[in-house]
Amino acid sequence: MKRKVIFLLALVMLLCSCGVQQSPQEETHTLIEDGNTIYFEAETTTTEPTTEAEKPIVSHLMVGGDIMSHVPQIKDAYVASSGTYDYNHMFVDPAKQLKKADYAVANLETVLAGGPNYTGFPNFNSPDALAYAVKDAGFDLVGTANNHTRDQGIDGINRTLDVLDEVTLAHVGTYRSQEERDKNNGIVVADVGGISVAFLCYTYGLNGYSLPQDKLYAANIFNIDYTSTLSQFNYDLVGKDLAAARALNTDMTAVLIHWGVEYQNAPNDYQKKIAKYLVSQGVDLIFGSHPHVLQPYEVIKTEDDSGKLRAGFVIYSFGNFISNQMTEPATKTTCILDLELTKNPVTGKTKLTDVRYTPYYMLHRDDLPAGQRRMLVNIHEAMAEYEAGKSKYIGANSYQRLKNALAHAHKILGEKGDKASK
Image (cartoon, rainbow, N blue to C red; front, side, top):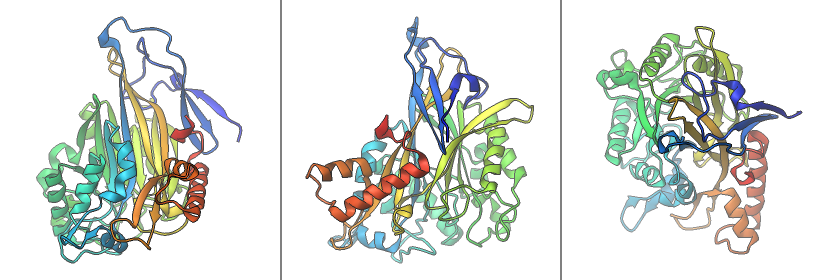
């Protein structure tokens, strides 16, 4: 497809609460739409700020995909000598990147209902150690509304939130009481390197389970018919939440949303319809999950209820972050998305000024002892170490799988957006 160049300045409202005006030292970023992907290129700064207060605030929000724990992962995390669990080895590579973020979020697609009977699919229940590893890796907030939210009942929802609080890992999407849900309409406001972002989280359903009528607050579900046809969007619930988000007057609004069709590398029409609605209601950033494979990202342009032009960024699916799904390369390939947010301190306006991704691959090594079998590896770094003859865990077969995974990521997300190509 012929490359189409659109200057970010022409969008005027790209991911901005109410318009964009350029401050003295802001770079001009050009939005490139190339096939099925977008990326940003910065031009040379032209003027210097006259005061320190005029310097733009620049922060980096990083986002990952589905954090899961299947039985082989539980076994790999088990430390026989102490009878405890430790997932930290699975996060070694992504932790290097996540710790550079001003804020990092992901989808926690399991529950922490307590042991000793830990389980994987279809009804997840993971050791508390997973939450500690997620926090140690550098994540700051997890979405907890997904199709596995009710795998261990209402008690499982409540205990998961208790553990996350104990770990000091922020969470959004599920709640222990109506009062907790009513606070800010369940919205979490985070300081992302000096830029305020309101986070919301929703799921399409609960794998056929329903919430008790007196506990509808427990999980954010965007479908009215969430136990059957999954096609009637709850405009009343989501609309009220988004109105509450606008009233908070944060610099940006982000939605984590569990949607789409599993194992499909392209979004469906319902995802696109929902994304357009969310942007029309003031959402700037949409982070999708559930398909367990990568789906592309794009900028959506639409009008709000007053007819004013808006634009928002959406990635339809990150795929799995850590899991034991084994389809090559689809369910083992993922990314960390690095979003550069820039706030003009003079006008108070905030916009998305850069989007890059780093591809990762879930490495399986069943011939090794527990504690070494599952690792999420940075594809570029792992390939470079192998090519230099310095790798401790990549052989010829794994190297070829990494090459295939990289090609897959480039096919879905576009090669130009790969952080290594910057």
